[in-house]
Length: 173
Length: 100
Image 1 (cartoon, each protein chain N blue to C red):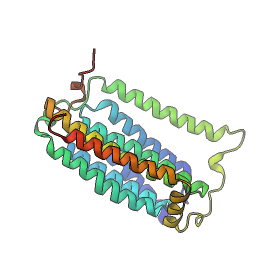
Image 2: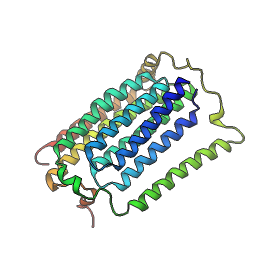
Image 3: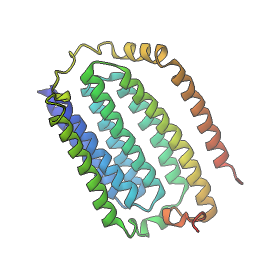
Image 4: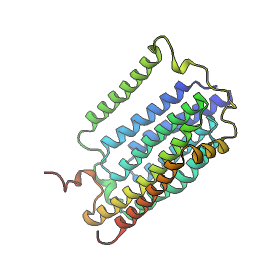
């Protein structure tokens, strides 16, 4: 019961503040609402018993990426950009097409549920609640054994991003 | 226990909102934020199915996606700063140097 209350609370919070991210005029408000969405997503990870990802979400997304965003918003002046037109000309067509895309995904999901040769993949029983139990230990074990090489490649990716950000921030490129 | 389909529908909603943000806004910073929303929706999906099948691999994928998002945000914001320094604007419509 408490699980369901928490899930619907966090889900509603996430969807509501995601809508506000997309619609608010001021970039700073958008950033604050994005932080709320990310925190609510962290709460959803917690209802899924993924404690390690919850911590990663808070530390990396809210503590790292969003600070970067807020810094850049501070660096570029926004007095001008608030007064400009916020949405482009084809916004209604674009919104309609995006909603069609969302409806298509929903239809594909519903069809896959009904039509799996009489088998409903999501109707299969969920794994036991204790299947992922020492969560951090299991994630660490899989990350450093099965996915060792992707992990190392991710470090190279971060190095590339570091160099790219430094080069882009230079005075003359 | 919440059924997995509810998580999938939540992730679908967040994904659609993110796509709407990418295609309708003019401000480049908000477009980048909408991309973060889309990546988050994917993460919810991955973790929900990891829970459903009792396998932890998808959570490792989610960590890789978060790494990607960090790299993308760093480089993207660097590009935005360089662009702002040259053109004094943040509008995506003004980025038309390559348009013929």
